Length: 172
View 1 (cartoon, rainbow, N blue to C red):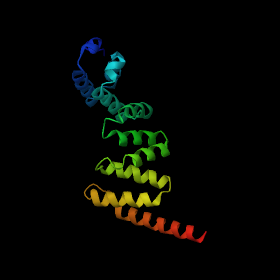
View 2 (cartoon, rainbow, N blue to C red):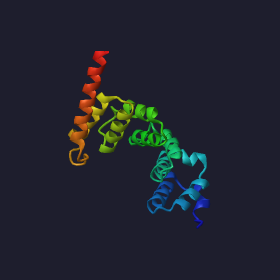
View 3 (tube, rainbow, N blue to C red):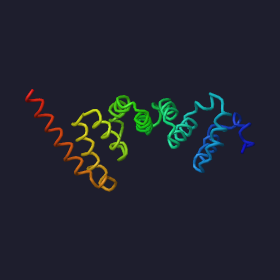
């Protein structure tokens, strides 16, 4: 289905284009969204609100390379982009890059439980057990109502592994 609006996109103010893209994304009209995207010039795509919609579309549709590319372009202007960029990198198998993004941005503000779960997963993969413990502590303290049911057990396991690693290092 071709939208008659698409040929006039470059005449729309960024706010109207953002609303249109947002509505297409929310009704899951992927074909029309992609078509609309192809009608936008680079200057229009560079507007922060439009770039955010593009990044959200690719993130929600699991197109991780495109998602990462767009969140990277927003990383200085959007609070949620460090998490979504890190998640996109994680899904691309870029573990070290993903972990680095979360660590660099850990002083920005209060994060939701998904941030801490991703950081915990990446910390565990990179065997940074001090950070795994920090993450599970943060999940339990900051998000008691949305924490996974096994959060306390996960914290205890991470503390145990950290202690074993500490003992092993002292013996060497």
